[in-house]
Length: 315
Image (tube, rainbow, N blue to C red; front, side, top):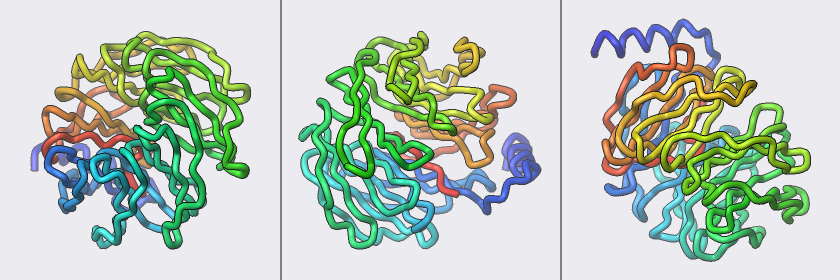
């Protein structure tokens, strides 16, 4: 174990968090697997075989399950968080990509890239309960903290839709930048951030009316976003630059551009709210960023084609 890794482990232990060894579930699309990282020990503890070119990840904390979208298989796999066994696979339709789960752990939502829909499944027996028509090529999805809304990025339509989770119907849709992909919402549910791949920027929306607040220029082909440090910092993966932009959410100014691996895609924040994990697709690894120092403090080798699209760290 390197000095840097030991130091990071000490930092994690000293943070006083109430989480017992959170795990990161990183999809490796090109070798049909999921790397499971013990974030306390900073090492891979298991590699789970998942066929169908796994891409998206959602964590169901109440049920202790992890959902992995499989675009080539048109569905998703269900992994037990503790045993790390695949419990079952579920068929959705065309090409499942974005995946999310409600706060109660009762429903899982799957974006179908080809069918322009979001399918809703219960998490008791995984029966399909609804299919909601959205915009073209739905991708990133996130549930609001109050569990009232599901937000969906419609990539080809350059828009974000807001779905009422009681009615399972669209309440509002608004235009953002060109080809939105990854999205995030803050802890109060007041702001939504959308990474726009083709316009090289992030759209900031007021969720009350789904109105645009600002547009933030970032690096080339921003893919996904996450928040850290009590929502004071926004982190954005810039695919074509091998970097992550760190943005002050109060001023909406870029504080740092952090070099990570080649083709960074998925990004998620550890439950301690300090360490940010970045999946690097071309380098087959994960960069760990300390949100306090805004520096990479570790790199963990994973599998081929690491994407980890979604919220991929489980408490």
